[in-house]
Image 1 (cartoon, rainbow, N blue to C red):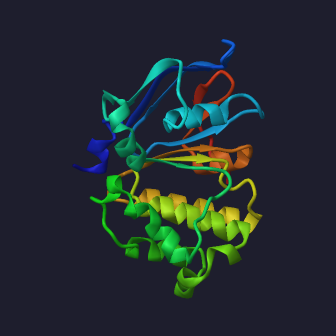
Image 2 (cartoon, rainbow, N blue to C red; image 1 turned 120 degrees about the horizontal axis):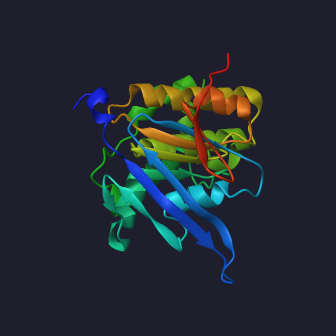
Length: 233
């Protein structure tokens, strides 16, 4: 199926999601989003407006009290969540790496049973690694010696090793210097353009310039309204 044909299909759909506290106070409510192959969404809005709550709900990391999440046209049942998370990958703001080398971190996620059907090598990320201007020897560096920016690069590459259909990014460049943030953006856009899966992403950012640069559509919180991005130069 071509990318053009595939874009008519719905990858991930959130229908009127709502989350509330134990006391019954609504944190987010009546938020919906439909993600097609190739979609590039940015989410913007003030701190505390529910952006991360919504993204974590979309990743099925937190329980929702209202609404429904559908993947490839069907509601996601509890027993399907591990497979869902292997296809819809969440990248948090601060990377969590295991002890050992960069290569060990990249291979780590492939050890889980739900990912056993995926290619069990990391050769597909080598070109991406080169795009970050890191030599192959970078694979053998100990994760404890990485800078914060390098750690986030490794976390990104580890997510891309899984060949996700949807990548959910929660302010991944907020702690990066400008140069590394630009490289991070570039690698995501390159992945989007070169992947045979025609994947999609949803990216939370506080930087409106970044939002317009990376995304074709922008979701603005707290209301969750969606508009077409006007690209910045």
